[in-house]
Length: 243
Ligand code: ZN
Image (tube, rainbow, N blue to C red; front, side, top):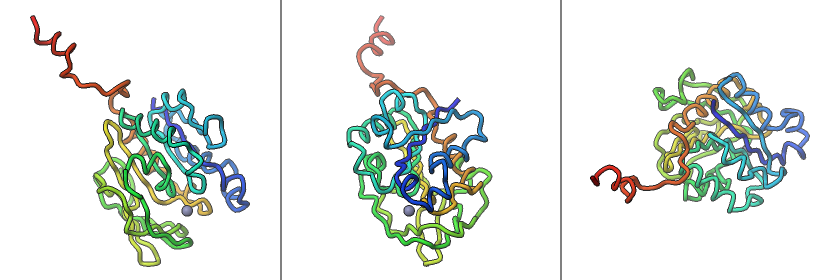
């Protein structure tokens, strides 16, 4: 089983009538619904307004893959929690940042760059698969179209990704590294651009397949390390080589 936690800022979801109408159970509810056809996933949802900003230690420490959606309240998450998330990624947890999570504190902490970009709402996006043998692209067509998405455009100030699995081409002419993977310590990170709160992106079945693939890909391949230590340290060497 893979323990997936979906963290949502949950601000638009409570305050914007368009978002309430589109996602009555919140963005976290819609993302959960896209994942639940995979019965190997144990899914928990949590929000910024929950105790301890929705990320108490016990929940974080029992998460294999953390999905993050945030937009207008990034600064309300204490850096201390962002550091804990980054530390757990370094020890093996998967992290999936969605849409405006590019400026979330956990994501920018993991990237180490500004993660700034160009943007314009109400465009059409063609999502091209640019790494068709990547596990996240399994079963995904060569191209699919989101009739209404927010344009995020280059230059996207991120470190060079391990893979650009998807590239977005927008009706404004802009292009964007729409689906990128990174390795951070023992953990895997996927950033995926579609998912503006007033668009029906989280009702799109291809997006659902991408997210299910991404969770499977990002899940730790080994148990998450309690601490990263060096096997060449004394005890190991003593046991193995000293007679
Ligand atoms: Zn947006």
